[in-house]
Image 1 (cartoon, rainbow, N blue to C red):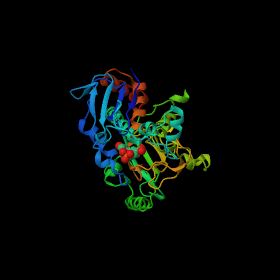
Image 2: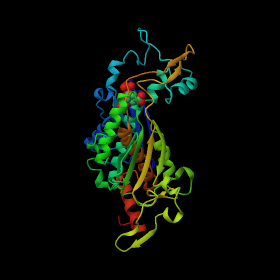
Image 3: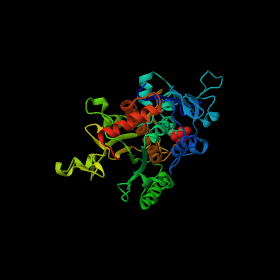
Length: 388
Ligand code: EPS
């Protein structure tokens, strides 16, 4: 099928997570080390809690791949939850003899209360286990497969943190693909070394005050051809697809494409990217205010998307809530948690962006075998005279 879709399943402390990716062409060579590296990257970042010391995520492929190449059939991947060993009774799929304590104190900002009411549960755990951002491990596994496809098409997807709490990065505001080498060496995945240090200090300061922190990450994709997405239908627009994909990440509350908020306050003459053509470069721009998307379609400039996260809603000094059994005021659930997940969320943002872009490539260039898709891409580049 010449589209690409994926779904995930799994609870945070259940036996494991599953992702199923449909629509990868046959014959795509997968790099096992690269897949595992993606999983490890999501576990990085200053501000994670105790859980990351327990987990060591890896991709276990259950179908759709043979001897390192895709078969064209659905690819199912499994990511085990090592922590399940400590939760076996509490999260058992089958009834257990032991008494399992229910959670009745929903956290403000989480899915807890709405999920309880909507699904008719009495135990908040039946909601929070799935709402947990542990699920993003499955997204990164799916995204790593999408990245393998994009890699074949000459596309790379990167991310960096530009704000944590009140600290903003100011250096290297317009990074190229090469600038991202080494971004994971920063403990907060930030390209600005001074801001990186200040972010670490901010996380430590707020953690001591029992606070959590939000922030902003940017995703950039390089090597895209023009023509991904389309102006012809609202749900075909590349920016609308990216917005949905990124806002779907736990705790992400806002997404912008290019210099969205800046150009809202500027005159039109300073808000667009003038068009140039030369024999050497072909079509090109000297600015990229649009973030690589015009009319819902990629224009061949680097894709730039920002996503803002609210602070994590599990607080070590809980907010006020109500006990859902007694209806009396109560403190919200206090669980082991992270102080901030912005560095990891950037990696998840890359995965979601890669999945959207891979789908656009599949829709535009089709092909049951990777060779067919590459042939169609090359014919298209030739037709539009694309030199990059
Ligand atoms: C999460 C709470 C923490 C995080 C978890 C997401 O888990 P726990 O409750 O087990 O300490 O560490 O994230 C992950 C496990 C992960 O792999 O990212 C939450 O409530 O969303």
